[in-house]
Image 1 (cartoon, helix red, strand yellow):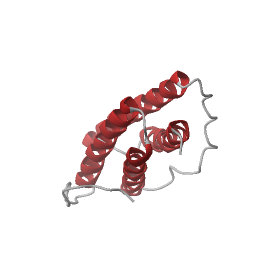
Image 2 (cartoon, one colour):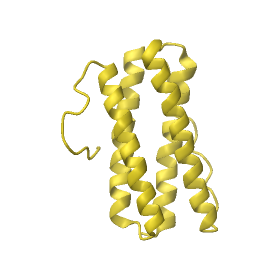
Image 3 (cartoon, one colour):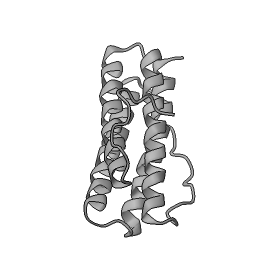
Image 4 (cartoon, helix red, strand yellow):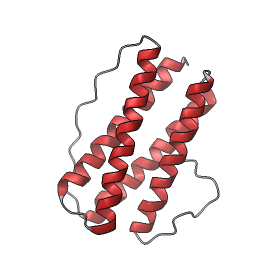
Length: 142
């Protein structure tokens, strides 16, 4: 798989993450620490999207159109946090897979950094749900 294909795949995953956090932050259902975390994670995910778009531009590749929005945002605060947690696991898996195929050192380093950031999000989301934040030494996603 070419680096371009991997970056495009990661971009689609990150665009979905932005969508999820926009739904959460726009719902008004989270308060306090949970709302602050969602706001911060949205900023992070938007930065990931920007970095991936920059990588595609550097490859002289067109930026794919964002996927059609999925319905959501109707759940309870707890359900919304769980949906974000599940997507963070998907993000981690995508970045872990990307590290096995990326060839450009800069992209590989960026992917490792973003994967670590997604794992941080995961730990906080688990805490918000009253779960063990770091139940295993190495998060591999799903």
